[in-house]
Amino acid sequence: METLFIIIVLIFSVVIHEVSHGFAAEAQGDPTARLAGRLTLNPLPHLDIFGSLILPGLLILSGSPFVVGWAKPVPYNPYNLRNYKWGEMLVAAAGPASNILIGLVFGLLIRFSGTIGLPDSFVEIAIYAVLINIVLAIFNMVPIPPLDGSKILFSLLPAKYLYIRENLERYGFFILIIFIVFFWRSLLPFIEICFRLFTGMSF
Image (tube, rainbow, N blue to C red; front, side, top):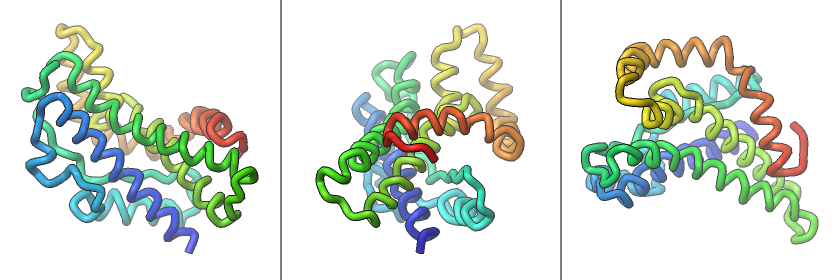
C-alpha cells in the first residue's frame, strides 16, 4: 500500500510539473500544449510507461532513497514565445517551481498538523509529497539535457557558447544515466536541507 501511495503522489507531481511548463508557454503566447490536449491534470495523456511507472516502481522496491520519475514532456514551440531570449528559461523554470510550491504547501500542513487536527495517515502521505516534490525540483535543476536545468543554463549562456548546448544535447541522455547511477548522492544534502526547511523534520 505504501508503494502505491508513493507512485500515485509521484505521478500527480510529475503531471503538475509538465502542465506547469504548458501553462508557462501558453502565458507567453504559445498554444502548442493546449492544442495537443496536454493542459489537463488527467494523468493518462501525460504518462510515460517507463518514467512514470516502471522506473519509480523499481527504485521503490529496491529500497533506493532516491525515487525519481517523469511524464511525457509537454510540447511547446520556442519560436512562438513572445520573449525569445528568456521565454525558454521561464518555461523550464515553471516545472521545478510547481514542485517547490507543492512541497511548501504540504510542508506547512505537516508543521501545523497538530494545530488543525490532521490524522497521522495524512501526515505520512504529506511527508511523501514533500520529499518527492523536493527531489523532482532539485533533480530537474541539474544542468544536463533534457532536464530543465540545462534549458535554464543555456538561456543564460552567451550566443558564442551555443556549441556547448549542441554537444550536451547530443550526449545528454547518456550523461544523465551516468549521473543517476554514480552521482545521485551529491543531491542528498540539498534534498535534506530543503526537507528540513519545509517540514521542520529530518529524514
